[in-house]
Image (cartoon, rainbow, N blue to C red; front, side):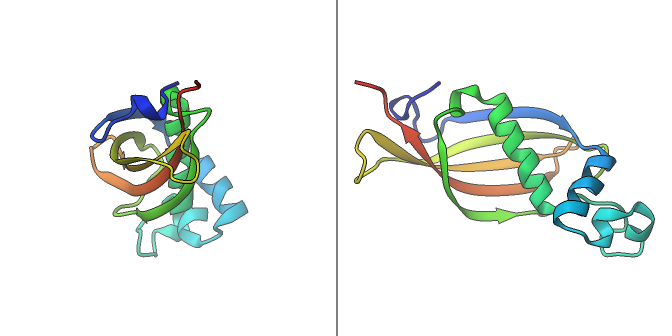
Length: 147
């Protein structure tokens, strides 16, 4: 694991791949976001998406899976403090193969907890065509190196 002191502005991390399955899109939507364009490929043809599309929140969950699964350096001690910005410029579709790129935008020592730091990180999720399906800027509480 990398500690706060090991991270610098401009550091980059990657993750993935993760393949999106139609059944997972539908299962997620049935439980959390039951809209026609997430639930039924046939019904989705007559919507804005013109086909089955993953919920943006499902895409966010898959992004988190890639962050934790592929970036052991940033897992197991970093805690999310909130998201400043999230967007889904294009839909995530069945069969998409996702990957992420992360960049550290800011790094500052915590005033209240000087043994920790706060990182502001931009994560971009791409599909197999290098099209952006999600952007997110989040703040992470990073553990400092034990003394």
